[in-house]
Amino acid sequence: MSFQDTARQFHTEGFAIVRDVFTPAELAEIEAALDYCLTEVGPTLEAGEIYYESTPARPIKSMFRLQQYHRRMAYLLTDRRLHELVQTVYDDPDVVIEQVGFFGKPARDGSVTPAHQDNIFQCFDPPDALTLTVAIDASTPDNGPLVCQVGSHELGLLPHVPSGVMGFSQQLIDPLDAQAYPPVEICMNRGDLCLHAVNTVHYSGANQTDRSRRQLAISCQASRAAIDEELMARRKAILAQLHADHE
Image 1 (cartoon, helix red, strand yellow):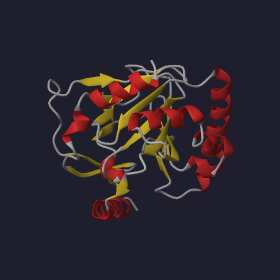
Image 2: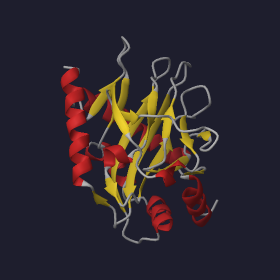
Image 3: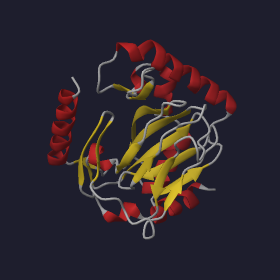
Image 4: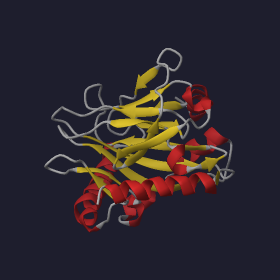
């Protein structure tokens, strides 16, 4: 798939998959950097930068700003292939790739992610922004794959309510009609990449298998995207209340 084909699919459906972006050697480097971030840096971070599953083992569910902790993660922000892909999607030579996060579905302990749109957290106006999801492990129908709903990115930002879920503080009030906006499981092999728009409705199920499902989430936006300060203030208030409720 060419980047032009990827961009067309992205704008039509709200997401697209690009296969075999990262080589086995690159994945080995990225995986080593991820292991360092999770095991060495993770225990030093406060809630808000890292979240854990609520099971007795308390495996890491998510962690943010990995580029601050390892140069291999920082290098992803300058990766030529990723810049060319996002530049093609937005027809913008000045796109911004600024943050690398981790989202995991630990084996047997990976919890449900409620349906939401990323822009309820990122607050862009216009919403010309996307998330690049890099598969560190294979993502299969039974280990909690990302599920995107076709065409939902064209609905604008939908009403959300506080979810009470640490790590995903808001969720859609009402689920979308699955016939009008068909859900598609994003099944990927190691090294594949998915891009979804910040207004694409997505969610994921639990992982009850013996295989982990680790992914990186790289935040990208067109140069014209700006922060909606009112929406951001609401997001911060909800997040602060969630953390207060879990203290």
